[in-house]
Length: 392
Image 1: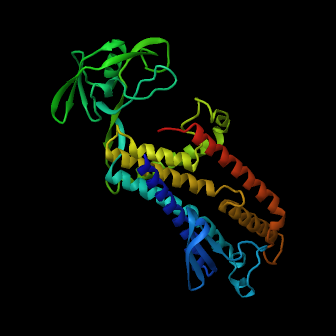
Image 2: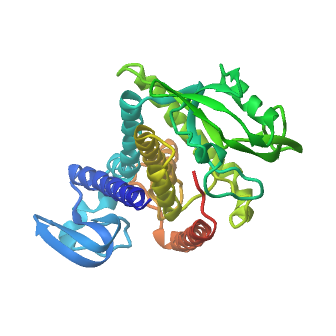
Image 3: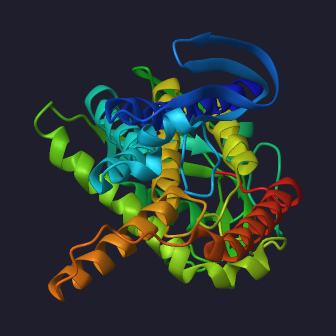
């Protein structure tokens, strides 16, 4: 698990640094002065000035920042830098610079998904009778340890041939045979690397719907297995539309989380916490650790799931950063859009003067309120991820 957490932390740090690099290089392209480019936060460990920019490392490797002179008219800067100040540049230049960070996150997500589809493929359908994972069997609220399948020696990749003498032809048939069997010993024959292996798991009894396997009141047998998925690899051309579908699915999922899952906040510290709900950086790192350390998954599956997780985080960060709230980039973009829209309407009425800028002093209370709310929300989710973590 530690390997996965470290790998996730490195991936996240690289993503954030690339985010800041997007701001940095676009700012320089438009002639703005970027005076500092640092990785991390806290006390400075190392720094060096090259040209007009100071590059450096901070003690806490949790993100980074780029200092662009004159982000708002409230900022005091050297008079010689005023012509190069951010707020004195054309609207298009400011829009490109402020959106560059999120665009970088979107590019990372798209490239990762595209590479996964090319190199590792995507789960296309449930395999007819291949074991995808073994797990414990929950006879109460939680469970731990090996389930009957793992205890009997069943392994990921085994292809079930028969159950108690009945030939198995589909996963649906297999699960129905298990449920109908009930508690007690059973005989399962599997194909493992071309050899037939006979296993004798001792099934346990749980309460489920006998027909669907969902929560119910029927006493049925349980083995503790999950299906495998047949992967479908894509060619360079076919992977393009499929990548778009995956990314769009992530966007709609993010929208659903932001708009329809706020009522789930009351369940953050309960057993009913939504696994598809909000998660902090700590929670995401824990999930990354679980994904990489999953003992019942093959390494290709672990790598694929990890890369998809990193892509999903980049997509989520990119979208979140565009929310029209100061001090997020989306807040600055919203201010810019308001200024330009107001200026356009005034020009229709004959105004030919310069663009009237928004008074940032009046926006400071809203900015501080947003910071307080975001910090409070982050601490709430962080606490839940520590006390009541989500597991993949």
